[in-house]
Length: 113
Image (cartoon, rainbow, N blue to C red):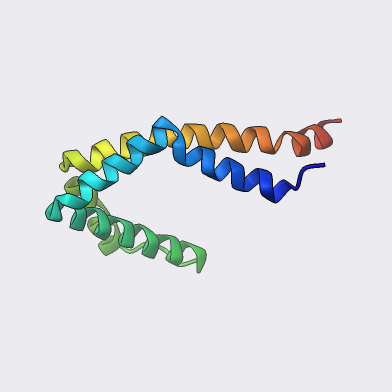
C-alpha cells in the first residue's frame, strides 16, 4: 500500500510541472517586474485579507471599507498585468477544483450510499 503522503508529495511535484502552473508562475514574475502594478496587487491582497479577518470576527463592513474596495478594484482592473495573472490563476484553479473533486469522491460516495 502506498503512503498517502508520498502520493501527495508526488502530486505537488507534478503540479509544479503543469503548463497552467508554469503560465501562472510566468505571469506573476511579469507582474513583479512592474513596480506600480505589483504594488497595486499587494495592496489589493492586503485589503482582501483585512476584510476576511473582519468577516471572521463577525464585524460588518463600513462605508469606508466599501469605498476602499471599489477604489482598489478599479485600480487593479486597470492593470493589464494583474488581469493576466488573474486569468492564469483562474485556469489553474480549475485544475485544483478538479483535483479536490476527485480526492473528495470517497467521502461523497460514503454519504450518498
